[in-house]
Length: 245
Ligand code: ZN
Image (tube, rainbow, N blue to C red; front, side, top):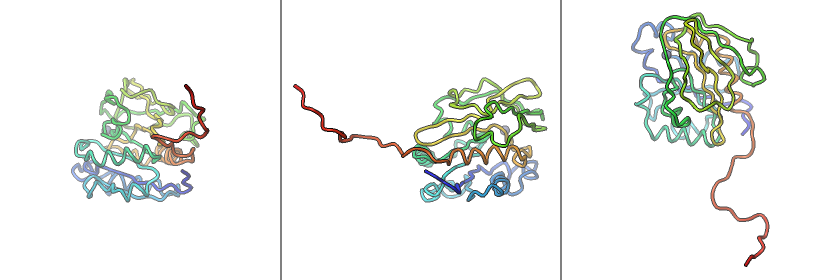
């Protein structure tokens, strides 16, 4: 797959923004629209989908025309239909990129791919987060400084119950003292998955230029070219196999 202009679908649960005035103030049109605007300068083909749309906005057709799916969910993970999760999982195995943001660590799709509880420690205390680039040679680190800071964020702390990432790109430190593996890259089947930690709904995190840069880099990384799609199942031999007795 080679996507010179990756087609990106930004999926958002879109519930907090419609029920909590504090969140509404920060993301009046929803986190998905803030991300769409923030990613627009990167030249992707951008679409959005939300939980309350038919099929959660993720029809077969939408997914067939999606190179990278970005996922933000929190309080309504259980409302995501298993059949849609099956569909997303199949597309990722076929090569679609998946970028899971913040509380998406508990989404059905992420837990399925990880096979672990994906549990972690958390605290809401308006604390500073410092994100360190620990793999500067990785494409997702392109253009980033050695570290960057978010003035206020929710804390996520270790232990984060996920399989060891194939590549760890970012590690967070929090003002209260905890650390967290905040940029974790995986491959599953023919697809690439990136988990990126920041983005609690009561903070303006998705307007931060470094945060947007990480997401944009992850879009390119997960949409980039790779080998031919694998084949599975029974096959004929390439050479004549000598009879044996
Ligand atoms: Zn949160």
